[in-house]
Image (cartoon, rainbow, N blue to C red; front, side, top):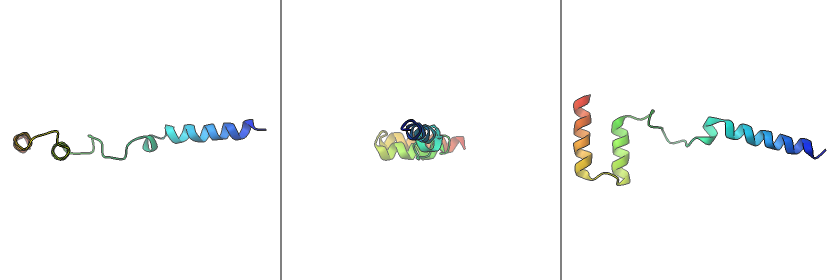
Length: 64
């Protein structure tokens, strides 16, 4: 009798983690964001200096 609830519990856990929306981080992925958005985020995180940010932003504006 103890086997059935255990099996149901394991199945529920399996289906929760199998669902990509549950296991995926809910931040926008790189496919959902523009290159400028990614650049702004990198600048906000501090991985780019102001000079790098401005230069890259200018390059992006030339491509569009």
